[in-house]
Image 1: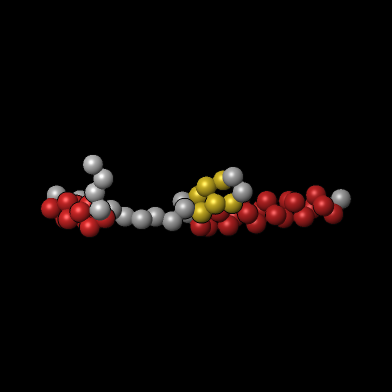
Image 2: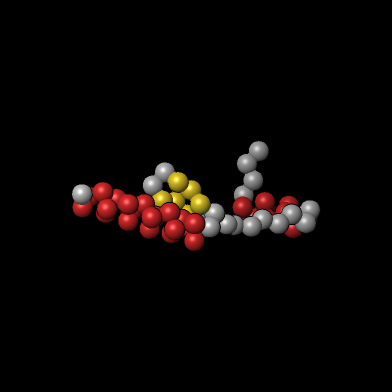
Length: 55
């Protein structure tokens, strides 16, 4: 039985259930929980690509 969003919220409140959202960062086919890790990899990958293109 499919419940509406409001029905789900009521049930969650009744049973003291909470939910949290988290950000997921993607670069190419890689998935990161931490933005710093995604940025570090992307920067290194792009620098390596630029160095390869120059030679």
